[in-house]
Amino acid sequence: MKAIMIRKYNPKETQSVFLVMDGIDKYLELVAIELPRVVIPYRENAHNVDCIPEGTYHVKKIVSPTKGKCFLLSDVPDRSMVEIHKGNFVSGKKVDSAGCILPGMSFDDINQDGNIDVSDSTQAMGKLWDTLPDSFNLTIL
Image 1 (cartoon, rainbow, N blue to C red):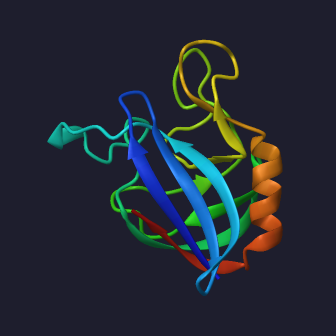
Image 2 (image 1 turned 30 degrees about the vertical axis):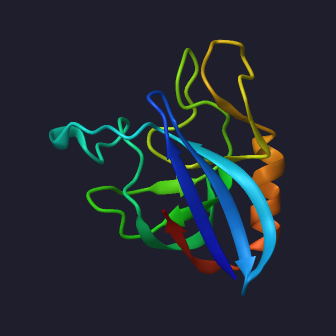
């Protein structure tokens, strides 16, 4: 199985289609949201400011004491503890990510604050957990 995220950069967030592929067959399609892409060079890839760089990352399942079931990305340049975990918000009054990837079933403005969020993140996380192996590669485009 392969996991692929195809991004769209917006001023307040980075939106992605999150695909799980089995060969050329699409096995699962979700959405994901991250922090926005900051184009100021000295802030690029900054923790709690920017989305992670495009590339391919090794990922493994972990159980976090604070977030429960999640996935840990390895070798993200200049970062540690970058995870895929449940959460809905990356901008606005409530924020669930300091630079991690939040999966969801769809994009929505859940709390009506004018910012795009992901809905049903717990359900999306469960689908990823049940579908993906203990260790895999994630390609972010």
